[in-house]
Amino acid sequence: MTLLKHTLLCALAVCSFTLPAFSQRNLEKPLSDSAIISLITASPGIQIYAHYGHSAIRVYDPGNRFDLVFNYGLFDFNSPNFLGRFITGQTDYVCGAFVYSDFLLEYQMENRSVTEQVINLTSAEKEAIWQALVKNIQPENRTYRYNFFFNNCATKPRDIIVSHLSGKVNYHWNGQYKSLRAEVHHFTEKHAWTQFGIDFLIGAQADAPATLNMQQFAPELLMQSFNKAVIVGDSGQIRPLVLETRQPVTIDPSLFEKNHNFPSPTLIMWMLFIAVSVSTFSEMRKGKVCHTLTAILYAIFGITGSIIAFLVLFSEHPTTHVNFLLLWQNPLHLIFAIGMIFAAFRKKWGGLYLSANFLLQLFALAGIAFFPQQLHPAMHPLLLIMLMRSAQGSWFYLKQVRK
Image (cartoon, rainbow, N blue to C red; front, side, top):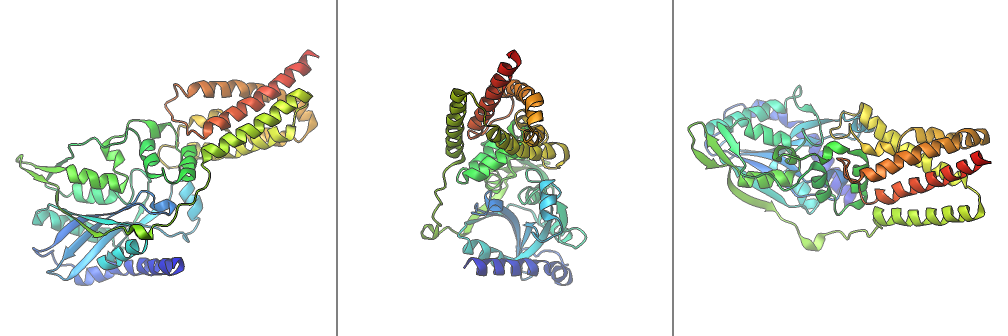
């Protein structure tokens, strides 16, 4: 079933790229008076890229006999250097057009609900939005630089709709999340390891107060804000933004996939903390140090620190440029771990390095109370592990100095 589903979805994606030419040949004339334009919102899915749901724009024109969905969420895993470009925030997405019934099929197959909000538009506003959409799916215009928070499948439809209204949108709402991280946590609460990984990568900027405009990167939040919004015309006339809400696809609870009960990252990290604690206190009693364990731990945090440092310095992703995790996870740990292989390095530099890092890690631990960056609960035992191994190494180093 999964193979069939992905095969059909790939076929639909290919077909969507043939629609711009079809539209230009047959749909150049203005929309008829019976046309409607809607915001389409799909509920979150199981795949990591679907955790936040999806948005699109439907244009239904029975007078001109077409029913299309404009989708800004198309991407190609097989494009050159996709992974590298994704990591650096240089991912290009594509706007394509689907036949509405084909678009719904994807979400029916994935057992995800679809909500349609018919936008309350004048004929001139409908035509302006239509012309903008047709322009956006032309080969020279359909590719855009994706940005997870600020230029994605939800913000693009929002901007197309709002920017072509003859008036201003008043949402009468500030949203429901205090920060982008809080919003990410909401949509990944059933995907603990995904949430843990994201918290490694996004930094302090994700904890700054988030405006409603920022929160609308999530399709469901955009849908809720549209429900509350009104359009204030130039003459002061007020009309609701949403004329009607429908649900063409609903969720069938009997088809829900069973959740895999993997241990949470917080539980795993505390178990790791206990294991390292037992080893450390055993070493203290014997008066010996397991340099291998210290080297392995520092190598791991050197690797994660290198990823964080790369994102801080080189990535175009938003919210990655200030990350206080670098205080106790940084690329130098990897060099230190390699140096620990050599006895001369351990004797001359090992204790000094661990002592310096012990001070940094103490600062990082105290910083939980005042740094403008929320620490994932599973990172607390990891920081304590680093503190413990650094303290132990520093203690043995001081003993050697006193001798």
